[in-house]
Image 1 (cartoon, rainbow, N blue to C red):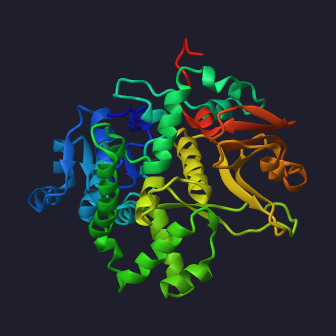
Image 2: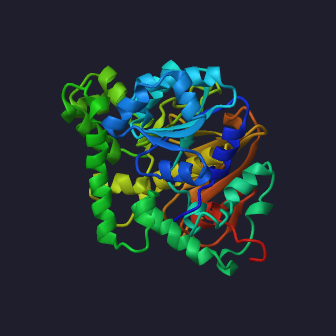
Image 3: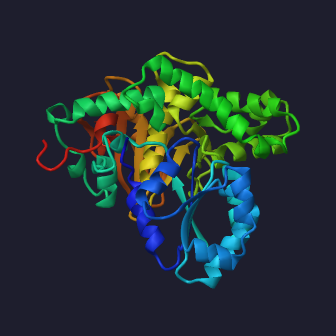
Length: 425
């Protein structure tokens, strides 16, 4: 069992005056129901998975509903669209009513929520486990933030919050192990169960693909033939961490670019992939405006293409980008994520935009990096419209080194893993 950073935020949201209905969305099997029931143990739990009980709930009037359920966790909410109208009426009828909506079919749930509950619900994303969450062992075990999050929260003005001797930290060795486990198997809670072996982890990830398709079949029914979608999904997996070439993906899938765009949007909405937009506010024509596509979970990606070997290159980059995204979004930090590329192939893997400026990150899977690996991080100021606050070279290298003024080589596990609790080194 792991603690989740979002648990505190969910409780806070349910107490706000203007978020009396919270819709919790995220990928399948990440623990949305477990989280909601833990965070709100005194709230009635209503599941609409059973057709018989679903009929009983949907036949209730708004008055009956609010009398029986002034507050409630409603699971599989997308299976009873009509009930959302009842909840809407209950919300308007009783100012103390509060609801948390969950659902495993994100396309239908979000569509219905946006249609029925527009202006009345707060939509909250939930992500697979972050590295700091993986360091916990129960709901009572506090989640220590990563150095990245702490640094960003304090303005990222200097490298002071990132400094130290990683090998002297009592948690660094464990963080390296967790990071490699994440890069290999991903962040789905099941695969971090210490009671199962690697073969069982691979079996679960393989079955996850079948479950995802079978459970979402109703959403996919609008695709007359599922095979093109499967071909495109496979093609995206092989092209993770590369520029999104819609024409190429459409050709591989045997569909029109418009249909390929529809498929890609489905993958993004169902938390399979994330698009990293290109930063291009500068009018410099050298900048490429094509977004990069990343698979969100490295375990799901690797099982899809049946890759059990070392995770390197583009796979490693996607794993780091996904972890950075999860931590920033879970922490609700006011940071925007981009990548930057010029037509002469100069590229920055991640560009974080804060209120005060930019942080550039280059990602390498190497266990030993040099100043040559940071060449794309040099002299970026002329391309940007805000100050460049710092540049990081993130890798498997266990040493923390200043490669040049403003450029720091930092271990991925040191940057993204849980910090030592008070009293650590």
